[in-house]
Image 1 (cartoon, helix red, strand yellow):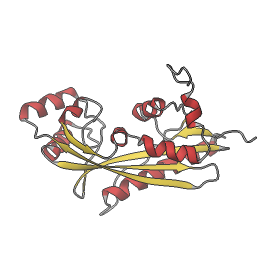
Image 2 (tube, helix red, strand yellow; image 1 turned 30 degrees about the horizontal axis):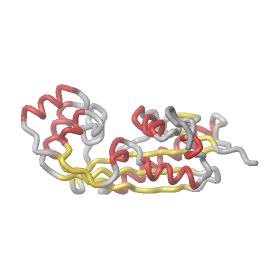
Image 3 (cartoon, helix red, strand yellow; image 1 turned 180 degrees about the vertical axis):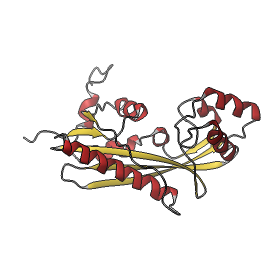
Image 4 (cartoon, helix red, strand yellow; image 1 turned 30 degrees about the vertical axis):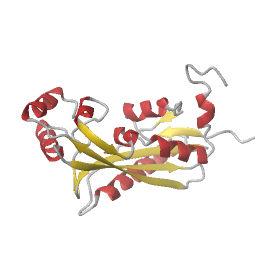
Length: 212
């Protein structure tokens, strides 16, 4: 009987790890993949999200090979891009960037593209783009100032974290909430299950399970 594959998460994001834990998945290895996330000339948001997810997965694969972790492993990576039309919003690092993002998002529908890539044990790439539409309420100057003062926006795509204070700005969401947080759970579980990773077996070990 073949040994089940190990899972490598190509990220150090506590949000992505928490999402996996939510569905009973604990990666055997964390291999952060720091890549250049600068968009290419005239690159569209959808393409950027998938390209970066692919690049993170392949970078983690290379690092895993260097450390002897590449045998019988699945490598999971994701990247999230926030866009208003064709305009790609940055991962805000300064208050000025965050303020610009909030002004663009206020009272408007924007899109969050999450690229998901899984490298199988045979080296095959499974890829998916999840497209989520979100509408923000019209933000008052007071709300913007308070949110900027919270610093929750720092390092977040589009200058906000939907799982935090900014969740109160969301009027409507069409698509995948978990993808906006950082990892689409439905598609992730589908990918892992198709590659023989025992997702459902892990659920039996979750706290509170008492059997049928």
